[in-house]
Amino acid sequence: MSKSNDELFKQVTSHAKEYGFVFQSSEIYDGLSAVYDYGQLGAELKNNLKTYWWKSMVQLHENIVGIDSAIFMHPKVWKASGHVDGFNDPMIDNKDSKKRYRADQLIEDKITRYQKDGKTAKAEELQNELDAALSSDNLAALKDIIEKHEIVCPVSGTRNWTDVRQFNLMFSTRMGAMAEGSDEVYLRPETAQGIFVNFLNVQKSGRMKIPFGIAQIGKAFRNEVIARQFIMRMREFEQMEMQFFVKPGTEMQWYTYWKEARLKWHIAMGIPAAKYRYHDHAKLAHYANAAVDIEFEFPFGFKEVEGIHSRTDFDLTQHQELSGKKLQYFDTETNQSYVPYVIETSIGLDRLFLLTLCTAYEEQDLSNDEKQDSRTVLHLHPALAPVKAAIFPLTKKDGLPEKAREIMNRLKFDFSLQYDEKDSIGKRYRRQDAIGTPCCITVDHQTLEDNTVTIRHRDSMEQERVAIADLEKLVGDMVSWKNLLL
Ligand code: GAP
Image (cartoon, rainbow, N blue to C red):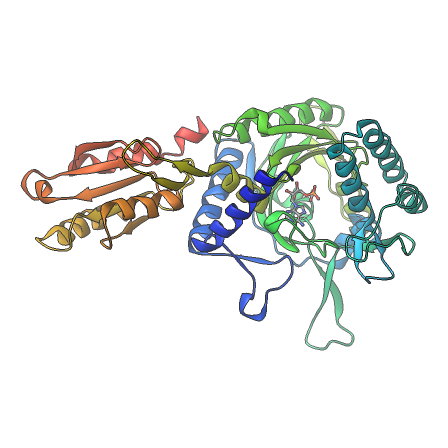
């Protein structure tokens, strides 16, 4: 991370805490590693991001429906899905520092260092070696690479490594009153399986015809070996996933369709296309025959935010075998039954939240010949902003607060609002800029005479005089989901 990007990321994370977007979990007990809480504004922004995804995936697609399945599932689900046997990260311990690392991430860090030092050929060679070791699941090769490139432990600085071992990422607990004799259950590591096991329930009860999709938003849990970069890699996080069931043989066409559609969705938020890139998987997950990541350029480099996976008929076939229940679709046109193929789109809500904050954050210099001035502003899309409008009485007297409250009481059913009468108007504007509120409405003495107010816009900082009677429509048009979805 370059110095300025490093600085920007620090500013974004401290801003997130200072203004009530994200807090470390159990902070008063010194926190719980890689677990975070969303504060009063974070919860609103997160809900808005979920709404954006849900509206565009479910509400705007007649052939996609949404469900909400339980976090706990029958333990056999995870056997069938391959997570019990195959959901592992390669890990390595340093014997001196006693620290544990993901072997592939140690190697990736070395690649980044080679790149920074201008050793492009070395970086490429190491990347090829890493890809080959990962695609053949060769743990010994990973250890050899670490030794050959003299990778040291960041803490002890030594090369005293253990062998590379596999580490299962699923959390487990016991279900039932008694610990002994109770069944071991897992906290789901992905929401997708709740969709697969309900495939026929939804298809039959909803009379869905292939191709169709099932979407859901929910928590997922992974015991990540290394957790870093704030809410980028968490142990408890949220996914927004959609499984699209298609006729076998048509999957690559739908894979291309969703790959393009999902990137367009990101760009529609107003984020420059240059901030995104595709990254084809070198090592395919056990269920996929094609997979691509949509990566976003965070201050710490390009990282995955969303995966598009062609999951074949792997999951449904596995569940059929282990449950003994048929999971097939009857095609009324051909009078044939088949197990559908699946294209999955899977985006991490927390990573989307982080990229939204990083893109929106700006320290703006507003100095002119007369005075030095600056502001911190979040250029959030108005539909996503946690607070849609702030209402200020110019002063705390002369009936202005009462008039401002009257406006607030009219608008509060449709919009999330903040009322503020403390400090100068300038300071109040700055507070709202810092949380991304698209507009501020000021009630002054003229309001009492002609029922007009000043509306000040966040990005342009321009002000206009408007009638109170027009406020609902003005604010409504500004924050409408149509601006994002059309
Ligand atoms: N059902 C497919 C699946 O889970 P994945 O690539 O492992 O695929 C999908 O995860 C998305 O979930 C990722 O692109 C990422 O945005 C998010 N994600 C995965 N692990 C995460 C973690 N530990 N913390 C935050 N987000 C995570």
